[in-house]
Image 1: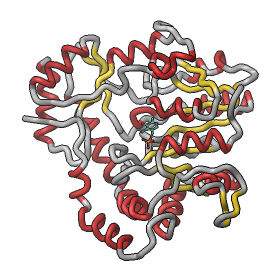
Image 2: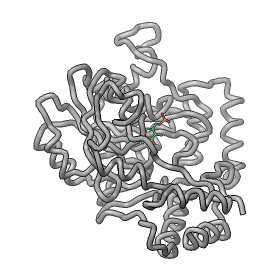
Image 3: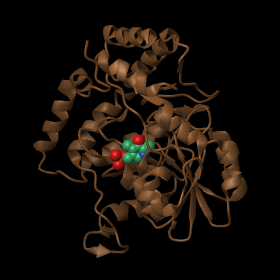
Image 4: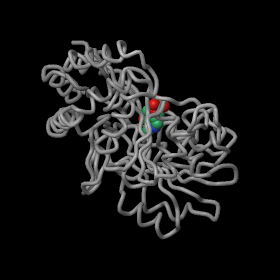
Length: 363
Ligand SMILES: *Cc1c(COP(=O)(O)O)cnc(C)c1O
C-alpha cells in the first residue's frame, strides 16, 4: 500500500459541489480582490475565534510580520519565541529588525511557560506563542507572565484553527492571533491566504491599512503599507471550509485517538496532551531515537512521513548572524532529531490508517 503523508484532494471532494459553486459565484461576479466574500469571511472567522475583528491577508507569514510591525516592535526590541518552530514564526520577528529570544519547549512541543521569565530583559516587548502541531500552548501561565511583565502576546495559530485552551480559542488570548490558510493547514485555502484576528480596533484598522498600500481611502496613503490582500476566490472557498471545520477537526481527532490507542511500540513516544488544552492534530508527531531507521522502514513499506522540523531556526543557515551554537537549546535539538509526523489527513481511510499502525508496530 502507498500512503502519502498528506492528501489534499480528498477534502475537496467531500464538499466538491459547495466549493465549485463558491468559485463560480466569484468568477461570475466581476469582483476579485477584497470584496464581499472577504468581508463575509472576516465576519464569520472573527465570530468563530470569538474575536471582534478579522483582517484577511495574503499569508500567515504576512500576518506575523504585519502584527509585529503594527505593534511598533522593531530594531532594538526583543520578542520571546519557542526555539522549536517553523522558520516563518521567527521571520515575523526578524523581518521587522527585532531580535528573537529563543526559549525551550515543554513536553507538549509548546513554549515552556516556566522558562519565559528567565528570558525577559528590558528590551522584551512581546511573547510569540506557537500552538505547534495543533495543540494549544500553556495559555493560563503565559497570560499571567505577560501581564506581570507588561508584555504583549502574539499568537502564531497557523496550525491551530479551532484548538482551545480551557474552552477559549487559540487566537483569542493575545492582542493578535495570526492565521495561515495555506492549503495543508486544517483550515486550508486553495492557494495562499492568511488573517489576523483581534479585539483591538486600532490594531485591526492598522493591519487593514497596511494590507492595502497603507490607505483607507484609495490613493490617500497614511502609512507605508504592503500588498497583502486576500482575494475573493480564496475567501469564498474558505467560507465553505469554515462551515465544515468542526467536522474536519473532529475527523482528525478520531484518527489521532486511534493512533493513541493502537500504536504499541516501546521505541516510540506518542504525543501528549496538556490538561485543559486540546489539539486539532494538524500533525500527529511521534518521537523515536532511531528515527532515521524508522523513517526508512516506513518508506520501504510505502508510507511517507515528514520531519517538522529537521533544523531549528537557531541552527538555520539564514540565522548564522544571531550567533547561536549547537547544544544551546538541547531539548529543541533533541526534538529536531527525534520527531516524525506520520500520515494524518481528512479522508484517510481506516484501511490506510490500520496499515500505518501495523507497520509502526512491526518496526
Ligand atoms: C504555515 C506556518 C506559517 C506560515 O504560513 P504561510 O501562510 O505559509 O505564510 C507560520 N507559522 C507556522 C507555525 C506555520 O506552520
